[in-house]
Image (cartoon, rainbow, N blue to C red; front, side, top):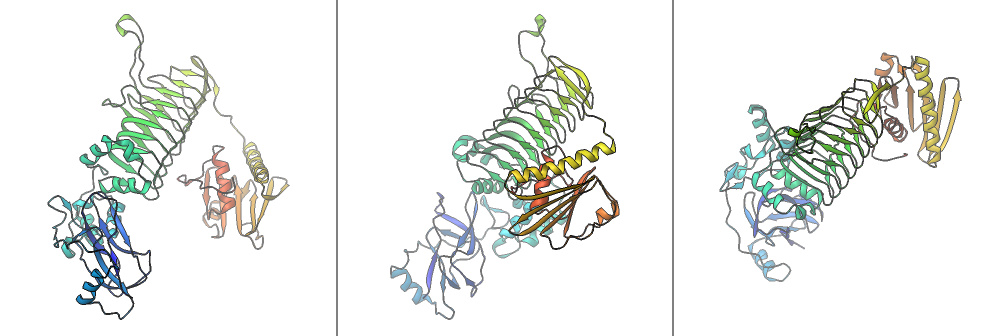
Length: 526
């Protein structure tokens, strides 16, 4: 029996919303709960789900029309049912549906704006615009009622100049969020992200803003997979981040401008800001694949540059300005940028003072205070910190191979401690690890050098071949059912099933980061 599909209450204060697009054509089959149409409020776009099983017998509104909440928008029933004006009048008066609000007159909106309203945009076109980094409000539609479609977006992109600075948020929206940031932070993740996107932010896929998290920005660019943890507040004039940016819970970030590379990982309770956080030279630049521990304080009153793969241990402090009694009376006072080079490490509770330059690969011991430049590759320690020795040992090829072999053996032991059925066999320089699961056998083989394709091992769910070095032609020709992991230089090729992903995470925690580096462990055996 035919039934009326109502426009549901969307939780908006508006009396009517813009009907954007039908997602099903008349006569199309639809099940209860499947998307039927798209509507748009002043703050977000919504997909309307079907309330009934059947076919779409008759749409009652058109794209571009403003529709009152709880108004009938369609008739859904069985194939061949007759839906005419007499049936519709009877249905509205029979009590099977709420009385329809007076139909709003159809409104034809020229693209992109008419009277301050956004022209209707097809969901696929909106997604395409985000993919290309375009402002959808600048794309004129040529479909019915000025509807913006994918073809319109592609045509605009082909003829448009590159966007100089994408992600600028609408000023009124920014002011709205700032008026009551706690209320905005309490919204759900998807709703918050939709609002940021709707008002100009460029946000990638699979991002998440946890409960209590809010971004107070004028410009916002987030790469795929970015996560902002519970009750974290990022108040940054311009926030630009690559893929997999991660802030844990209760982080407080205040800065005029902050840029983050891929996979920059900040744990819980981190503070960025302090005095001068919004001065003209206040800028934080963080490279890729680094780690910042709990209760770290970073003070970018002047430019603070942190390179790739930098580790800043918990409770460390990095200052770009000092504060105290009068400089005119002889007391020290300094405002100066700080640079931390690639692959450097700050120990627990280490302190860097203004103007310090930490060289690439250098290590500052826990509890040390650094007031002078640290050359690349050196180990500094003490208060004030002094040059002690080289930060890393020089290893022979045999020593590297021995350490790699020991890593594989320890990996097998760790899997066993976690309850995995593991068999580890050592033979000379080689190690063979087998893990038995309900899904089948997983094998990991280690030898120092792989010069040719190892012999087949029979039916396996997963096969991982690990070596310090591979013959390049073999590595590039790795079979599709084999994962090859080279340790020097570190890189991976092939599928990442359970064993390979666990070993990659095991290596990452020991400072061995495989290329491609932009990867996050989503949980598994470790």
